[in-house]
Image 1 (cartoon, rainbow, N blue to C red):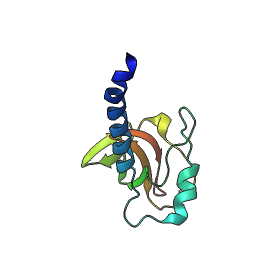
Image 2 (cartoon, one colour; image 1 turned 90 degrees about the horizontal axis):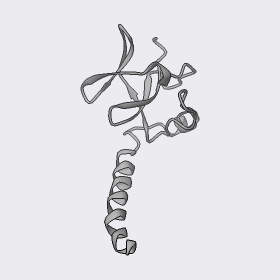
Image 3 (cartoon, rainbow, N blue to C red; image 1 turned 180 degrees about the vertical axis):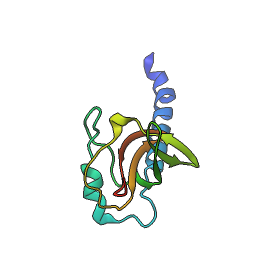
Length: 112
């Protein structure tokens, strides 16, 4: 009986996965030499990979009263302190790995 419901359950899952892959396209003018650095980023809060070149972007950032904020889609989004990675940053700018407006990882730029 459950086999009749598989197509109904499988289709939304496949569409969601396809949507996530479509959003993970590398940015225009991505520097492929930076891919190993992006792939080396590890989540400081729970461990595991933050992102890859396809997930992470250079972003505008600022220090606000309660910490870092990044500009996403024209809105300043707070960066949770447990998601900040303090390490070398060869991009020359702040980098954020996000899913929608949720910050997964953030590496401050050299100016901060």
